[in-house]
Structure formats: C-alpha cells, structure tokens
Length: 477
Image 1 (cartoon, rainbow, N blue to C red):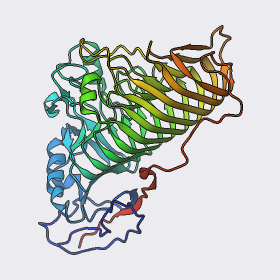
Image 2: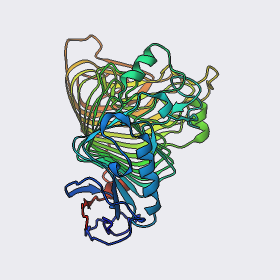
Image 3: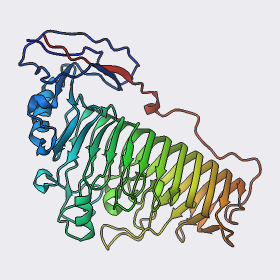
C-alpha cells in the first residue's frame, strides 16, 4: 500500500516565497487513506502546501446532490487533523454536487474544490448547529437567540486554505431568505464561510453563490488573503454581503467580482456597547481590483457596526457599476470608537446614486438603551483619482451635530451627473478640503489648489505574503 503525500518546507511567519518540490513517500494505510477515485494531477497557488491528501469519497461522500455529506466532511476533516503537526493535509472535493450541513475546519489544512465540484448548503435546519452570539455584537441579527453556524466554520485555527479550480459553494439561500421575509426565523441565518480567532487564512479561486446571509466573514482574525472570488447573489436578497472583515487585522482582498443584495465589502468591528467593550478594531486592510454590482448598497462600507474602530484601510483600483454608493461610512450616536486613516485611490464608477456618502445617523442598534455619549470620531478620510458617470448625487455627507466628520480630502474627481441638480452636494457637520473636483463641492469642503489627497506608499505586512506552487499527485501502487 502507499500514501500519496507532498513534502514542503514549513510555512514560516516570514512567508518567504518557496519552490515546492513534490516527493512521493511510501507509508502505511493507517497514516493516510489512498484516494479511492482517480483524479488528474494538478497544481495550485497557496500560502502553504500539504504533505498528506485525501478525497471526500474516501470517507463515504456521495456527490448526487441529494445525499447528505455532513458526516463525510466531518469524518474526513477529523481524520486529516492528525497530520496538523506532520506537514498538514488537504481534502479534495471532486466533481459532483455535495449536499452538506455545517462543518468545521482544522489547522494546517486545505479544502480544495475541483472544477465542477459544487458544495450545496443543506436546507435541513438540524444540520446547522447553533452558535452563541459574537461578544462584540451582544445579540444576533435576525433573532436574539444566536447564530446558526456557518456552512464552513472554524475557530482558533492557524494556516487554513479554502481554494479550488473555480469550484462552487452554493448556500441555497432562498430557503432562508423566504423565512426571513416571513419573520419565521428562530435564530439568525448562517453565513457561508466564517473563521473566528484564527490566523494565516487564504480564501481564493472559488465561485460562491446564494449565501443565506454574509458570504465571507473572518472575525477576530488576522493575516488573511481573499482573492479571485466570484460572489453572486440576487440583488434583492437580504443581507448577502460579499466579504466582511470584522475586528480583523492585516487583510488583503484582491481581484474579486461581487454581485450582491447588500454591501459588496463591509468592514466591521462590533455593535455599540458590545463592540466598545471588546475593543478590537479592523485595521491594516488593502482592497484592490474589485468589481461590484449592488444597486441598493455600497461597493465598500465602513460600518455600520464599527464600535471597535476601523483604521488604515486602503482601497485602490476598484470599479462599481449600477451601485448605490462607492466607499461609504455608516455610523451613529452610540457607536463610539473611530473610523480614521482611510485612503481611496482610483475609483471607476458608472450608474451610481451617490459617489461620496457618509451617514452619522444610521438607525440600527442592538438595544434601545445605547449610550448617547458614545460618539464616533470620523477623521482622515481621503479620496483621489475618481471618475464617475451617470450619477444622481455627487455626495451626501452627513456628520453628527457637535461631532463633525473632519479631515475629509477629495482630489482629482470628475463626476458626470445623470441630470442637472440644484444641489449635487449635500453636506452637514463635515470639514475638509477638495482639489480639482467637478461639479463644485459644498462650501464645507473648500477648494485648495494643486492638492493630491494622501495614499500610503508603504506596504502592509500582508502584501509581502507570496503564494507557493502546491500540487496534488494521484499515485497508487
């Protein structure tokens, strides 16, 4: 008997780029199962490669779209977790339709979906365990009892890769959306992918469709790369945010295409007093080469749940089409904390309601008795190099009375209005400057000649992470 394996250098904190050599090693059946189905060899990019491999069918998986594979996924991951300290393991999901409820990942682990592999979210609620509410939220969103565990979940993990050759994860969200609209939910809908208290995460090269709620939700986590995703949900589907970094640090989001019923990307950090108490900000986040379609929401939202703070967010070379707003700030009295050091460069926008939108009176609160003295501090918000066409309003900037949004800078922005407006800019309780902006901004943002708003020249640590070339080799003797 043999064991298919790959030998690779240990994944170091320095993330030094490595050349991965594939080495076949003989071993015993007890150490790792032989793949039962024949798959072609393939390579893929990842932050870490794995020494051991298995296929879902080795653990009783049936890809007929009808048979539950929850036990198969759990059995496979439990079995492969024994290799966490021996080079890690990868689970291959082959072509087929693999119906499953929620399952948990493990450390030093790769979940790989082949082309034409489809993971289907079960509509049997007994296959979705209940989670307690997140500490920084205090209550669940749809119902106070708690959250349903996400389809793919993990907590306190390190070195996790969820990737594929454009395989698909389908949350079959319509079942949950219908219950939401009919007010029939007893607990909050599950998200699609959710990793808590984890680090060294890669989610890439997949198609994600029809999540019951948020698609990708790293929370209380760090060192995250999310790239090459196609995320699709009906534009009227409720709360189907694309990517939501939440109280997370050192995040790289690149080359994603998102069509959503809510914000394409929403950066969060907790809700009112609960988020203030946890005090864990979202920071050091870079977003590049995003394409977003979301007629009722934002391309990138900062908030509204931002009570742990949001700082050092960089958005570059992004496109929004038929989207309500571009990079929007959402906050309210009671949120506390801050949104500061936000840098946006290179927005290409077409068919927008608003180009610039900031809201200081967002109405959502977990409790009625929020602290009216918990005022958010919004400062250092920079936009430059913006081209927008077919726009209804250039800007709606609404700060908070006695707590103005300050340090707003907008430069080199050309906005073509869909129709003439007496007030293309609507500004209250804000302060800042503009340069080379058309149409002429409001008086609270006076013109300053020859100004380029700030955008950092340094790199975030996550930008230095390089992918390795990893391999799967199907070898049976």
